Amino acid sequence: MVALPPHTSSEMMHRRTDSMESYPDMSSESDSESSANEARVYMTKTSPKKREHQRTSSQDKIRLPKSTSSDSHGSDTSLTRRKRRRRIPDKPNISLNLWSFMKNAIGKELSKIPMPVNFNEPLSMLQRIMEEMEYSEILDQASKCADSAEQMAWVAAFTVSAYATTLFRVGKPFNPLLGETFEFDRMEDLGWKGISEQVSHHPPMLAMHIDGREWSTWQEFTMTTKFRGRYLQIIPMGIAHLVFHKTGHHYTWRKVTTTVNNIIVGKLWVDNHGEMDITNHTNGDKCHLKYSAYSYFSRENPRKVTGVVTDVQGNAKWVLTGTWDQKMEAAQIIHAEESNKGKPVFETGPHKTMWKVRPPPPGSERIYFFNQLTIEMNEPEEGVAPTDSRNRPDQRLMEEGQWDEANRVKVRLEEKQREVRKQREAEAEKARAEGLDYPPYKPTWFQKERDVTTGALMHVYNKQYWDCKDRQDWHMCPDIFL
Image 1 (tube, helix red, strand yellow):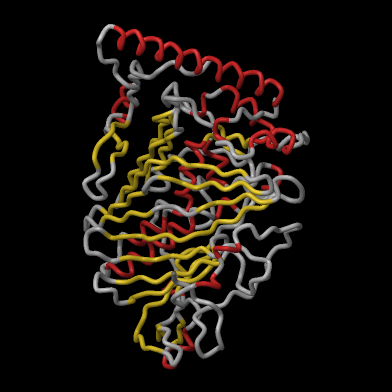
Image 2 (cartoon, one colour):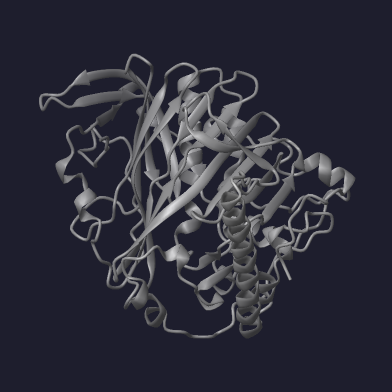
């Protein structure tokens, strides 16, 4: 495992000075994952000749393409661009005891437990997964890199940025119905567009594909949950892919674990922890990131993330440090040597900021802690598929503050889905009795293929959605809503 703990000033790579926010009753369920038993610890020291440039200089800052905004989404003043909403209705002040519902779910798969919308946020998991593109400008910057190791450092920063939205987001996204979709076309202002679809119900699984101007990314996402009373662990499954069009560099990674603490009593708070390995399958570069689990007894900065980029021979090229809720910095390794403790010591060049979190919209605590991109996701839009999450009635009612009606509609939607599943099961049983094959459920916009890079069988985009949208041809879409 890799870590970059604080050391003396001569060996320190970077150290945050901002203090941790106060969380009452913080438990240490994940202390077993702390750095106490690490086998390898990397230390760094900055080159004396470049020490005066330790902080990020102006040339190190991200230069955003003209199609993006560095401080907000959808804020371009061009008359040709769509004006997107800046706010959603405030969350109603309706209390409900979470423990009264969760106590019967201990040891069970949480995705199979019916829950009222009171514990949700007005967003589907199909939309939630696309929030990972909040800082897509990092990939635009990475696409410009001639050096593959530096590009890997940018990719690593992008993977960390995807967790920034989780800090205060303790609401549960809506479980998508089978066949439910979500499209987000931001090519005009942000330089990318994407489509996601719920491709399986048991187990719940979605697939997503996003095309940028200089890159494409896709993934199949499912998860397992562990509820142990005081905390809930969400363990993502599946592999995320990223390809840069110009060079063909193909990256993959798996996500780390998210834990929601204080389920029974106290303030809910979120931690992301574990280890992530990013691989460039084109040339063998790798990046190992460690997300340190929170520990009451640790002196490390909370939410800390550290990492090292290595080439195919295992030579360290870049080091990264930061936190998943604030920023990530990186520095190129100039020289590496062994310390008298047998641990590698890296002499690095100046650090540069690879990613820094944007401030939330004013009053975000009243709107589920949504960021601006998230606010825009569920805005009604003409021309999308009839299966789009924006058209889901219970989710829309919840956003509008009509929670009682949303709960009633949610029950009707789930009953309709169960009836469809029972009908398919009956048809399959009849086919088996007659010695016939019964075709499995087939998603509309994704198909199963063997991935040549990883060897895994996964759902990949069939490249039909945007053409069908242009023609407004939705005859193949299932009838899933009311």
